[in-house]
Length: 203
Image (cartoon, rainbow, N blue to C red):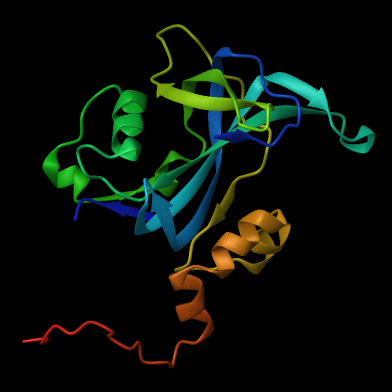
């Protein structure tokens, strides 16, 4: 199972996580697939992944039967290892060194599952007046600083080995993004031949 980024934030909590820096551990990697988004008035097709970290030192009782659970925070990234991409910048900050061009040609982001780091969280006020936690940085864990053991189970959803159980466990807004993606549609109708709507001659 792999989710490959190539070179060719929102918290689950209603009450935002306090701004600051925290030891964290990556436990979830959800491939959202390729959807069209409008950015600054321009429609673009973007292949995205949603990465989630748990904060094992910050816990809360969400359901009595589950006891204390770690707070979590997620961020969506375009699956691109271009030198100016947000994903690559975050990863280089996390690993504490830049990627070589060979490494950046193809990087499986699922390798991040279970890896500790130091995350930075700031607050952002939306147009509706609500305050949201925004993950602004992921850095190498400082020397001498430890991150507690992972609490949540690993969670990976990739189109090359689609896990229905993981998909069904996701909130509806994520399911909607996945179902509307080009990859999900192709997976659901594997025998359909895509129609090239361009006017370009293929040779």
